[in-house]
Length: 309
Image (cartoon, rainbow, N blue to C red; front, side, top):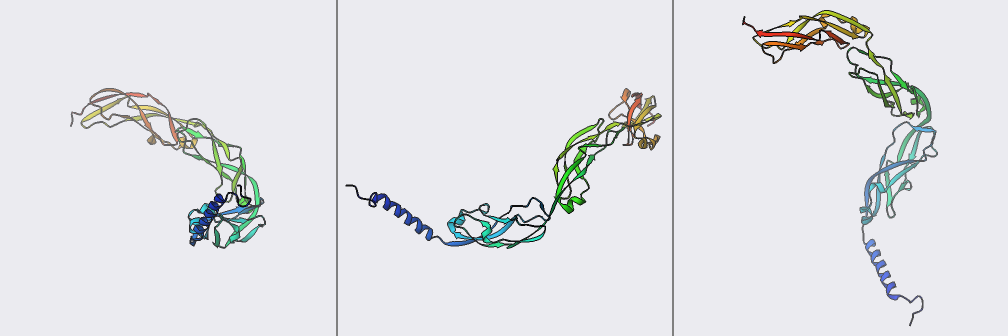
């Protein structure tokens, strides 16, 4: 015989009621506890025509209350403190943080926030175009000089608080390395501003070209003596010819400051015993000039035992 509603499925209904009572008793039997958490602070509805002068706090401390089971499942990222900035104006403003401004999971009560007041300073936003100042590291190879550096584009747009934008004079590039270069160097590099309140809007990278060319001035030292380096003890040596012509090139200032004592021609005799050798000549010069040619490039070396010792 079918029982009339609501007496149908009495067994299933009894089981459901039993489970509900058991769950209620389990929850009701849990202790209510408090816990302190450091949670993110989120700024919402930021006015597009304002800029923050100071870096706002990213975290605040909250005390939350709930059952021990619920708090055990709660992590700081589940709770977010929110400041609504839609009505912010230029100047120094105070924003109250109340429990109603903290989003928390169901069953978790926010009882305290520290700090309860956040001070933020705003300024009108501004944009401006400023020149790009390229940064170059190192020196070209000896005998080569660096020409006028070009940047494309030569200006970029920056944005930020009006006072900071007004005082910004340039943006800097990442360093372009030219150490030892013998040809022009072109690189695409990022740009930035040293003031953290100012940011680059567009473009964020530029193309920098550093012209590298042979020095415009040359000079020849016709009779640079060949020095014998590394000659072993009890040995004597002789170079033929005993001197060489050294052709130098570099900037006008670098070449004009170089004299005969700055140019040292030499051959390396380390580890060589008595005999005849043909060895390359090496030349030391100031960093501002480079060796174009050595004439002759090799010399004949005679090494013999020093009988006078």
